[in-house]
Length: 229
Image (cartoon, rainbow, N blue to C red; front, side):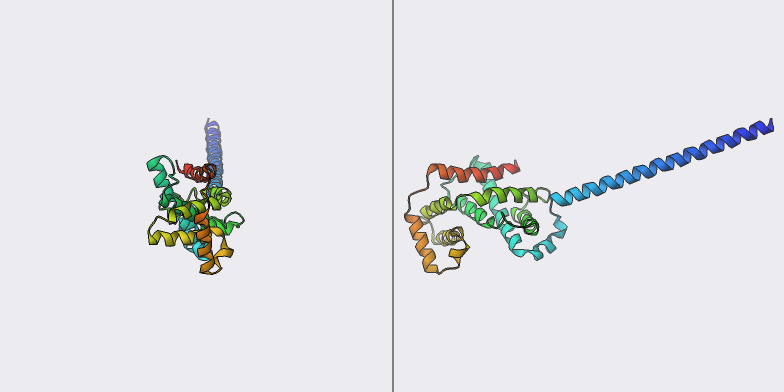
């Protein structure tokens, strides 16, 4: 009888040891899976968002792109506020036209830019839009701007701005002159003020942009603003 009891105890100890080893293996496997999931999530997030804690180094690495992004972000915020209030973009409003011109100008280098430029631009978007663009959607918004804003007809915007310039304040006239020069392209911006002034006068005397062209510009900008609904 003692021999049987001793044998039973030995079997119980072996069973307990086996269960313990099995539990340990299961826990190790679970921890490994959790770590893999965590790494995957972290890597995925880093590919689709801008880490705001790294913003300083990103901006330092490409301040031109960051500044352009900041301007674009501020313009988006102004346009989105108007769009939410009125349900549309009033294309006869000078403030709206200035914001659109600033947005388009700031996006001109996006289309053929590399990942470093786009990341810095996205960081600027977050800072400039004060909450409209987030770390999570900054790169997707940057991509949308690159494919949409670089195709906008700048001549249409220039014509609309020039038409407003004749009846606005001196400060606004100076802003419009600057925007018209930028819309005309970097090559014209590097020329003399006399040539820029001549271009402004010429634009002001042209016929108004057709309703279809104006609507196309409005639609392009509205498509971007609808990303934030």
